[in-house]
Length: 250
Image (cartoon, one colour):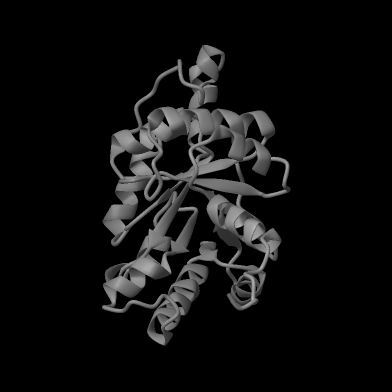
C-alpha cells in the first residue's frame, strides 16, 4: 500500500501499535487516522505477527509503517515484502547509515532482493516492472536519537530516498546523559534537527503525547506525528470510566 507524506501546510497523525493483535489494527482502521506504526523495536512482534497486522491494515485501508528492530537488509526487506507502506528506522546516526538504509529499501540503485511471490508484488500478479516501481515508492523515515545524529541531521536529511527525519527524544536524552526527554537541552537539540531537516527540504516527524504538544510542534514545521499508542489509548479510556477511589475512612 503506497503512502504519501503530507504536502505543504498539511500534517498527518498516526499512532504506535504495540499489541500484537490484528484486531487492534482493524479497529484503528475505522478511526480516521492517516497511518499507524507497528513497533517491532519495543513490542513483541515476530514475523508472523507483523504479517497478520499488515494484512489487517490492507483490509481496512490503513497504511502501516514498521519501526524495525534493526536496520539490516534482511529485516527491511522482510517488512516491505509483507506490504508495509514504509519503515521507521531507529538509530540512524550518520549519512552513511542513511545511505545504507535507503539502499536496502530500493530495487533500482539499491540492494533490495526481488521476489514476485510477496504481498508487495501482488503474489505474482504484478509484472516485474510494476512491482519494482511500486516497491521503490516505499517511505523511509530515519530516526534521529543521538548526539551524533543531531550533528549529522542536515547530511542525513539530504540523502536521496530519505523521506523524513523523526526525532526520538527519549533515546536522545539518554545519549546526552539525561533522564528527561523534556529537558531544555533535548528540546533545543530537537529544534536544531527540525530546522536542519526543513532547510534540506525534508519533512520532520515526532512522537507526541497529546494534541497540545502536537500543535506546539506543528507551529515549528513538524508535519508527521505518531501520537500515543494503542496501549495508552486503552489505558486512558479505561481510567476515564473507572470509579474514583473511595474517600470514606475505614
